[in-house]
Image (cartoon, rainbow, N blue to C red; front, side, top):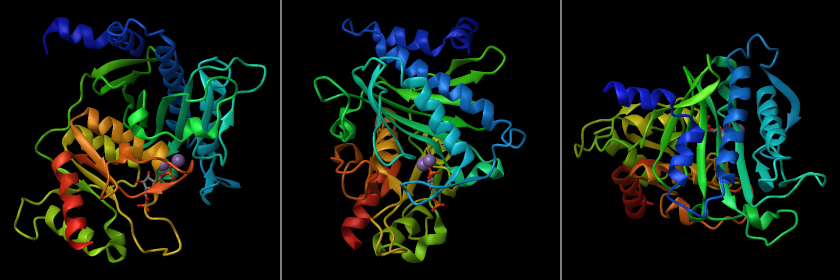
Length: 342
Ligand code: AHG
Ligand code: MN
Ligand code: MN
């Protein structure tokens, strides 16, 4: 990297990068820039806790069970409250919705109401918190549909094609914020010495030649014939392609981030483990759709096995979906196997 380019990378903050991007949109008001900055600040606060979770009495579980029926980890709760409290008073949002709360989160009456909607998974990969495995925050930003007054549930139930911006923060060997406003995918690494996210990965594109596939092979016996055959294909068992390496962390953000940079496919397919449960574990609105937006911005694709994730019209805040995401040709191959074999 030439010196001037290195300098450009070293000092490009999120604000400068977004303002440079928004210069192309004269009508841009800068509110989205500020909203992304608010999310970055939440990421810094959460990161400060995750990097010393073992010391900060914040490991382990609360006594609570969330709307997902899952035991709430202390860090889940901390992250959830941090994001809400850093965004409930800014006048940029009409409503928020979080994985940890059954209903949309209103803006308190004494604060101004804005035009954006923020949906988020405050802490993804919670089961890994106590084992020092990377976890993350995932967010989606929409424009409100309702004209005025408090934001509504309908404002939250929008298809991914309406996304204004989406991204994630990954708390790993470094803390990174990766986002897109529809103009490519860009990664910023937190420099703790200055407390700023600085541009480190400009215009990320998924490498054409994939390296990994990511799935919980432990559930193979619960999959459909098509998903089993697809998995055999990825492992080169049918001789049609070279075997891919298996990497599965159990944190969607970590698995997605690795495949975004190295090339590969992540999938959490429908399974018949709990016949009474809806197909797929991952949530459409604050896991699948935001990452699908990023995947497509990085030349990839995301599907539920039959339909483009970004086209799915949500009917419920916490609805789940099967997810195949990563290199476009690998995801389309999954759709092919499922179409042929079910
Ligand atoms: P969350 O911690 O927000 O509930 O998300 C956990 C998800 C996702 O991060 C990961 O890909 C998946 O759960 C792992 O599920 P399994 O343990 O069933 O493989
Ligand atoms: Mn999650
Ligand atoms: Mn979560």
